[in-house]
Length: 338
Image (spheres, rainbow, N blue to C red):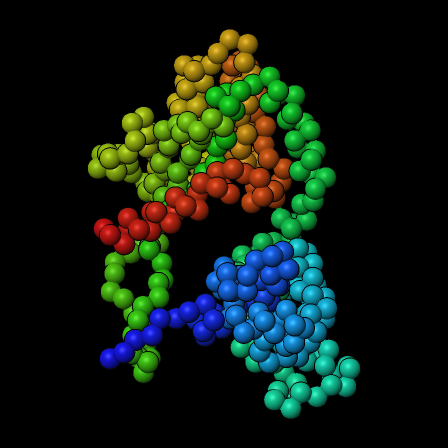
């Protein structure tokens, strides 16, 4: 069988963008040969010749329903409402385009009731540098946190941070994990009405208190089981120095937080503290974290203990934003393997 090598002038470069075409034309105008410009910019030589002669300057493909200016307005609108906390779906974009066409009295024959299809919306997203993302729901109290609250927090903590170093700045946060690996997508026959996977799991959650320094050192965790008794086999296999406790609810209360504070955090501070350095400890503003004994010990050890602004931990809590998400993804992999 005879084979043919694709040359720069063949249909090997038929799928090009307008930016590639414009770049190739500029290269020719700067003195590059059309053959070389075609190969470098990956655009057919015949197309490049037409562009240099001013022919076929319109974008390739079927004309868009809206002009580039009109699409840019819609794209900016999507960005604004997403910033306000009310992002729009693909169905919303379809309705926006339909109402826009109806208002201008334009009827597109290929569209049913002037309503764009999924493929048109996908191309609109691609042309305007948009993306489809999964949105998480937050309460209005969290959404009400503004720039003033965040700036005020950093203004208050700035003097203490200037007297400290990364080894003396601590951030703590608690989270919980379960033995439920969650739902996953599987490949099944199309006529399969119900997809189930046989796998044991429970709804029991295990709370973990995690703390680290700004320089990257991670302290031993404290693990709290939801149980009335703490058995010996539940207290093995953890990192060196891990503290294990139990509670009926499985969550940290004032007593458990005080145990973590006195058995893990304060001993580490006493071992690593350098003379003249300020120790800053930042965490959630839960009432259970500020028991009288904790405040007394913090004053005696000269520890600057400060909480994050209310309802702002999802924005500026380092462990919550940057550590727990990848940690829980890795935990699910371990669960699935086990």
